Each structure stands twice: as C-alpha cells, then as structure tokens.
Image 1: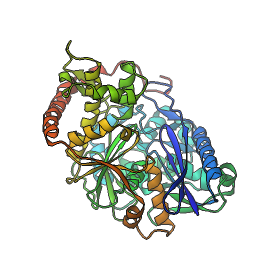
Image 2: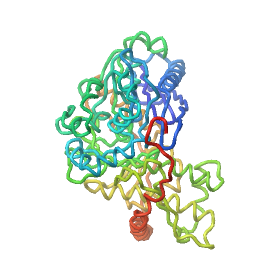
Image 3: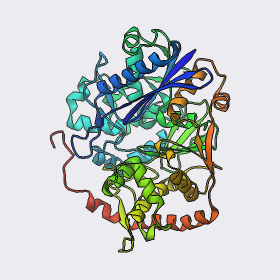
Length: 499
C-alpha cells in the first residue's frame, strides 16, 4: 500500500508519495505566491493555495503503483485564514510574516498584556499571530470579521477542503489562544487581547487522539484520492519537521533552514518563566516543542544575493566560502524583516546593519559576513533554549551547502546531522499518520524505523573558540544598534485599511 503527505510551506507546496517501508515513490512541488500589496503586508490567495495542493496531489497519485490509503497534512502556521459559514474565503490569507499589526503588538507589550499572556500560552506574541491579525482587522476591516465564521490556519484550511470539517491541530492552536498546560482554549487570553467577541470564530480543537477524518467525495474528485481514506491532521510545519528529523524525545534539537530559521528543542515540561520563543504541543504525547522561529532566515540570504548581484542563494554560499576566515572584520546583524524580530527576543522595530566595513573588504567578505550573521541567530536561539543538546539536526534547503553546514557546526559547537531526505516536514506528517492510524505503535519506534542520517558535521574546536568571540561582538553590535531601530522604520503608513 502507499500513502501521501502534504507539506504546504509559505512559498512551496510539496506532496510526497510513500511506500510502506518509507521509500519516497514520488514527489511533486508547486510554487505559491506571497503578495505584498502594502508595506509590511504578506498575503496569499487561499483558493490558489488549495488549487496548487490539489494539482500536486493528482500528479503524485498518478505516479504511484497503487491507490493511497492515507493522506497526512502539515502546513505553515500562524496567520489568519478566514472563511464564511459555507467554507469560502472572506479574503486573502494574512500570513505569519505579516507586519501590519506592529502597533497593536507593541501596545500589548507596553501594557503588560504580552507578559501575562505568555504565562498562559507559553508563547511570545508576533505580528503575524491570529490575535494580532484579528485585532487589526476589527479596527480596520470590521466587515471582514463580521462575514467570517471560522478562523483557520493554512493546515486547517487544507483540512477543511479535504474533509469538509473546520478544525485546528493543538500545535497550531497553542499560540495565541490556548492554555498550554490545560491544552484548551483560554477565556482569559481572549479577555487580555480584548477579543471576546471573536471567540465564536474558533474551530474544533484536535488533540493527539483525534487526528483522523475521512476524505470527502468532493475532495476525492479534485485530488484523485480515494473517497473515505483517512485524512490525518498532522502538527504544523515546525513540529512535523522536528518529528521528520527524528527529534521526538526530550533534549533533542533541530533547526529548519527555511524562510524562517526555526531552532527547536523537545521538552517534556512547560516553562513560562522566561518570555522568549514559543512553546507548542509537539504532536507526540507528553512532549512539547520550545521553538525560536526567527524572522531572519532565507529571505535575508535571498536579499543578500540580490544586493551582491548574484542570481541565487547558492551563489551567495559559494562567494562566502571564498571570504576571509574573519570576513575581514565585517559583521552583520540580520534583522531585515519589516515585522522586526520575534526570536529569541521580540521587537517589531528591529533592523539590520553591516559594520566593520573598510576598503580592504570585498564582495566575498561581505557575503561571508551575511551568512555568519544569519548563523549567529541559531546560536542565539540555542542560548535561550532550555537544556544543552548534544547535537543539532538540520533540515531545509540550506542543507545543500556543505560550507554552511560546517559553519553552523563551528558557530554552535555542536555536531550537525542532515536527514537522508529533503522532504523532512512531509516525512514528519507521514510518521504522524502511521501512528494516528495504528500502523506504528508510537513515535520513537516510527522514527527509529524510518528516519535516516545522510551526513554528520563535527565542529572544529579552534573555529568554535574564534566564533565565540565573534558571537560576543554580534550581541554587542545588536545592543549598540537598538536605540537606532525606531529611527530607521521609515514613514510609510500601515495603520489603516486605506493607508
């Protein structure tokens, strides 16, 4: 028999067909467009995302030797994917990296709301979280809120299209409306955000024991999947990727090198004394994911490649590898997102900077400084994380660069492992499906059987010592630049619907 896993990322839809033994029989990818109609906005057409998923699924189904008997779904998290009472979008999806609600989140921080909310939810707020988006819409587009019947995430939207049922996985729901210890919606959080009237928008909350729904006849017609097969609502992408990398027991760590760099530690307890990062249910019984999903990742490297006249991030990596070992003294603070930074600290005004430039620095040195600055954020997140992992599993597009893998090992001082598949999030969804449908007894067994390591990079101790000094420089430069951030935000208005 075969099975299918869907991984709906921010810019790419990936669908993988699996044999029972975990062999990847077919892979299909479809690009999706993120539109930015106004400064700081990030949106997607919900119907276009579904069409891309259905098209990719049809391609994989046609390539499999027999009909799939299960489909598992993971997707990008946060944002607001609003639908009416007939399941139709009431507008474009507002994404996790949208920054229009900067002023609202700053007010919650200033008024102490964010701090109290963290003690309940375990997660710091960011501008692309559903509560921030809802607050902005209520103030600037109240008609859309009134026309909406359900607040979904991307995974919930795909689940609705596949099954006809509006629901959300616990991991996706953990921030910002769920009490992470009680694992249920929190009335107090709605009071704190002054969003009591929007509680009606919340869908059914699905826990680890309630992941399976039958595929609808209409979805079968659109995707080519057999009607009635199990649809497994897997945890959202950062959790599914941890599972797919084999991080399913407390103390294990991984980092996703994608649009965001998400550094993650598996824990068996919830700690809310230090308000940094997010804590969500992992999707593995009794386990939580302490995650630090930065706003400084692949987008920053793409920007750097463009600024240096390069055609790809791969070219940037190659150029950086030719730079001086200390980047000729050039240092980079990588907070370039219009939404600022959210991990391991929160500041919607955070901005990036290049320093240490001289006439002796060349393009290679600048490229290396850009890559080192982004890599420093991984170490920064590990420093804020609980415990001391003895290794770091890496996944995402960046793992194709041997130079970057060695750099991450040297900067963090940890052995770095690379899974034997590029589609780690999809594999995590598939593993969740195996456990949810009883084909595997538990996650440790499933991971031991179906997760393989392709390569290991061990840190050079001398290089680690050198990078420790540069990490201290990184922290000092950030603090020196912090007073200037609010002066560099520009003057373009984003506060109103007609701005």
